[in-house]
Image (cartoon, rainbow, N blue to C red; front, side, top):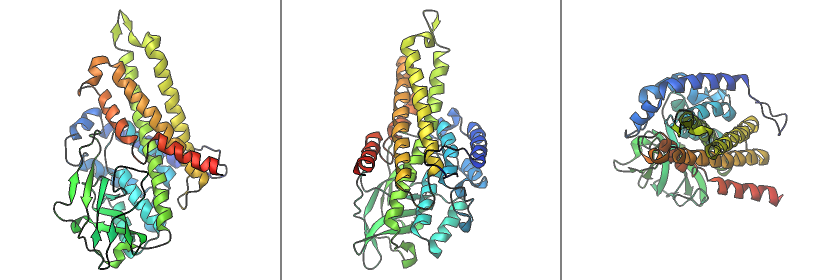
Length: 376
């Protein structure tokens, strides 16, 4: 990536290649029919598709070369995630990527390096960030007791059903640390799936109480707090990229309908009441992509500074507003049919309602922006 200017927006050769490769892959592997076919499944995705993604090396894109990754950085992931959002492809890729980022940024040991290798080889992982539904609440009540036994529950853990490794912030002797828990260490009924409005996504409540870990499964370093904050920022950026892709697909659905549906012998897209809002959707989407790729241009794989935070906050706020508005208009423009389960517009509306909350909604990110800008 080019870091020469904090006002720059570049598109590297690697990003262009990933954009083209992933666009074709997602177009073939995740048609709307495929998406609907996975809505009621346990995992929410096709295992064969996941294995193909692993073979393409996508799980190692942002992992440094010293850990056998590609070393292309977080910015290299953005085109891929955008295309996954465009195709509504539901896999644990984002959750797994964020888990790897947290391990790399927190400081590794032999155990966590083996986890990174498992991730590259295709083992899904996730971070158990939350203990309630509030992304603004950073209090951690889950703890490791003196005999290295975890006590506590984590909520809304993304892709918990598929994950083979869980990374959770916990308190140990009044210090925030990370615990790495293998799926086999959980009790039989520890994972309780949530029913989400977005049926292409999966999350669950996990009771980690009684899980005994060994010292190598605990990451204690001065980097943990900063790493957690940085990964939340990265998560917001990747969610914004996914939102932009879904928003683009939603807009295409709207345009297709406006140019085929007739009323009073005219295509309904010719009426200003529908034409003008559609233009607004396009300009909002273009603004979202500008913010997102600017953030992808300057974001660091080492430590996230003030300018990077500003860029990512702006990207998530704009992408959330754009997708929420576009998905809402999609349902409205389709009329009564738009409210039915058979209409694809409701798939985008459900995705918009869920994704706007992930890593904080637009108001949350604007409040963080205000605190950064006006406190200087």
